[in-house]
Image (cartoon, rainbow, N blue to C red; front, side):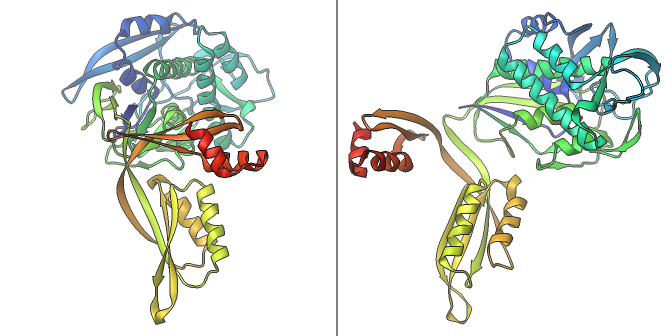
Length: 424
């Protein structure tokens, strides 16, 4: 299995993710030529080698009509003013920080037009991209528009981006989507994200870090605020991480083949970069899991069964019960739920809601699993799915019981007849 691990201990921004992924592809100049030739209006893209805290990596520069701009769609989107037409030009002062560059000075006033989500989608549709990449780019912009819609309290269709910032964001998002397609990881694991701290100056005033749109996009994702003052995770970075991440946590056990360093603009006490690790896991998955458990002695078997099925339906990795003896010689049940660490709060709430317990214990474990896939076997009774598990030098194949049982009922034969057919 091909794993991509993103170390976001210094946040995430569109240009940094682009640069980190670019270092993983062999023909970097060819990729940049392809990206520049897509036809994003007025955009040219360059990369340069820079050093941060003595570590050399790649820094991206995006120019729009010859001017370098920042990736800050959260500074510009706003509800449309219906007192004047949608497409128009005007001059005004729009100050904002640069990508991963807190507290930047105000940019000079200049003329530019607004773009709404539909304008962006039409632009993306016109680019020389595969349908898969176009779909990914549009989906990331959907996340951004949805976040801005939530922050401003208006429909997403009424959110408008200024032209220069939009073209910069289109370039970053398109670049990351193209590189993800080029790298083609089976699994994208992301570290907890450092969002920075303090406040950031933007066109509409002083905002807390993370900016409201970024904070909305990062909900249910493990984040933290370190000692560094400034905006480390931008809305574009948050949207890209939210869209592409398969899971969050520490780096899994894997053989690393290549490492990419995507450098930010500012110098901090820590190396300002996103690190991308590309490697193979040999079909073996090592990950952290959380076990939530409680002792129950006042629920019926039916109620426990209902809670177990509901929690599995909500995405628990496993739910199981063990008979136990409790105080005053009462027979009881140890009710245990396995889940991913970032879903712990969700399952704590569900356990309290659907069981009678008044207290839940938590334990953290490392687990190793075989790589799982599904294949379909054609039988004379109909198609049956098979679960295939591989790794550690073993391969196991198991027929999906529900499929086999359904075929047995539909064809009026025994379950054994269907299973025997599957084995052949």
